Amino acid sequence: MASRCCESGYDEEPPRKRPRLRTSDPNRIFTDFSEHFIKQLSHVCGHYLCWPGTQRNPVLTSLQFLNSNAADDNQGIPFPRAYCSVKPTNTKKQVFGSVFKKGIDILLDYFTNRKIPENKQECHVLRKLLDYLLAKIDTATQAPLVKLGNFCEDDQTVILTNHLFGKLSASSKYVIDKNSAGKFHDCPCGSECKITGYYGDTSIGDEDVWHGNVDVIINQELGVSHIEKEDCTQDSPGGQYSSDKKKNPFHTFRNDQIIAETVVFSFLQKQYHPENSHFLCPCIGVTRTALVFYFYDSEYDILLESSRIPLLDSETDINLLAIITSWLVVNYKYLSSGLPETLQNSESAGFFCHAEEKIEKYRNHLKFGNVELTSPIPEISKLGTDTDVLSDARSKFFQIAFETN
Image (cartoon, rainbow, N blue to C red; front, side, top):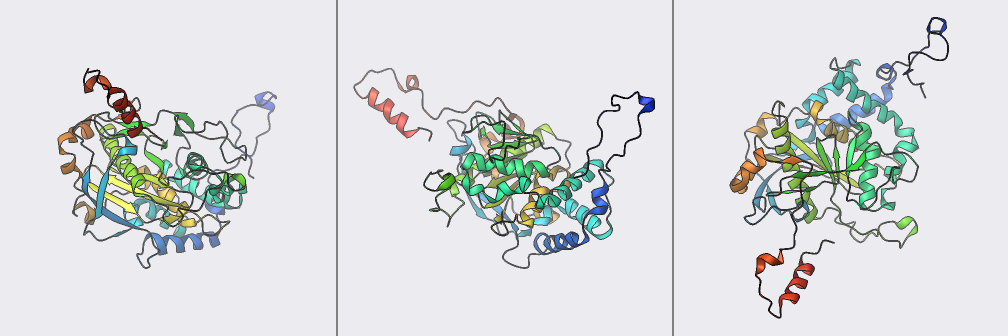
């Protein structure tokens, strides 16, 4: 491993007697990166990101709202109870790379001519990708991803963020929902590595509309949520998941939640960063075996859903496509070109219409943090002051009906 650059200007010797130290060049990876690996990656990018040639290739499907509770008359809706009935629009499916033309061009320039981006942030995120790809031989970095099935839902999300998304992102900082099951300074992968994030407030939205805690928020730019609801059992060594639901790993009621989160994130970015060149914002849905990406543009009212992308290529190897798509998504601020023109002029998702009564809330009154969750249990005092014989039963029925699992 190359030695780190010396952070201090001096050691114990007087400065004038100190010999000049040779420091590693952080840009050396751009020249040392294997030509063979470049050819392999070029095949993945050309075949899977830029060409809708086979059914295995990831595509983006445009979705339209049929119904939702985004503007419920009575109260705001917490994310776990979000309801989104959606269907594909008539818009032609797009290749995954169509919303990341900027990132595709950066990769193409580097793969073709070893050209390094002049922009410092773009150079930085390209270096993050190459560093991570070289780390494929580093079992401490990527081995835990192969064993996700040994961990329960909350731990899987943290491991994926700590060992994949956080290492590919321009910033490795992220916030984990402080209400999650486990709180560790070390990564739950068991290898005693430290998490580069922290536990804190991940609430977003507004109490009068969709709102709640996201599993993980990366750099206040996108959310990561587990969309596979299963119980972690101890029936097998290591508490491995039972395989009863492997045939259908994506459950609709969890997809509703991440669609709602994606919509809120886009409105938040438009509200907090109106200077951005576009407002196509992603969220990441994860399971123990695959990734799915959702995108919403709160300017053009376009909702996109990606194909399911397997996390593993084999039982022991991470899928290169999962790495590259994750890199594009977590760095969308630098790599996304926004909606292509064909989508800007296509059929909208219809969210503006479905949320019309509260659309101003979404546009102007959303918050990062300090969002109080709406209590799902009606206040008894608002139901009447009578003391009839059924009041106690009524209260118990409400407790059962609205109990949070």
